[in-house]
Length: 86
Ligand code: TRP
Image (cartoon, rainbow, N blue to C red; front, side):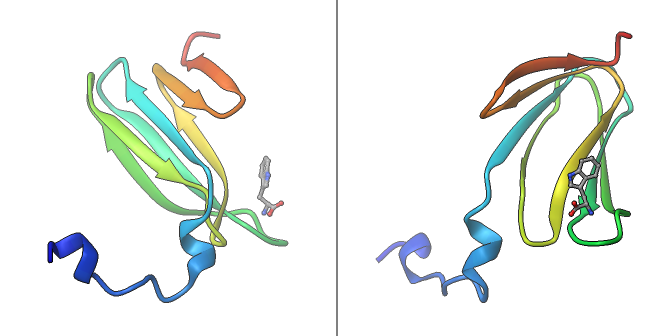
């Protein structure tokens, strides 16, 4: 049996049922921030990508919104958008 089959289930299935987005950085120093769900909206995590790097990020019970700063291509369920050129 392979490692994936023997891995224990996630402690909270709500953490693994959220939608994903894909962010491809089009310049160095793109920042992706996870914003908290609930009454307060604060950044709980950020990732910095260099040009060509890709991050696949998930909405969870912790993450309600995702903010991207810098030039990037963003793929979501509702479509594709470019950030970073006003
Ligand atoms: N704390 C907010 C909430 O749970 C986070 C949030 C959801 C948000 N959607 C947003 C923040 C859109 C900015 C924009 O509702």
